[in-house]
Length: 75
Image (tube, rainbow, N blue to C red):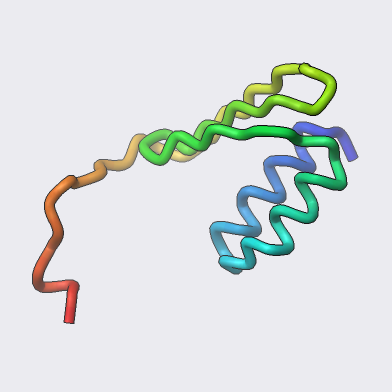
């Protein structure tokens, strides 16, 4: 599987399953040193241990992120 498709699969899986430990193991196994996840767009910037830069564009639409809590949802 191509690295970019595999990484996209990892991020989709961690969003769905919320298994962060498995996500970190997958990233380490694939030589990923750092990642920046942009919440509003779903885009991801990745840096490998070898210093390579990978950019993954999401096909999700822009989401709105509020800085104030919704008290109706918190109970």
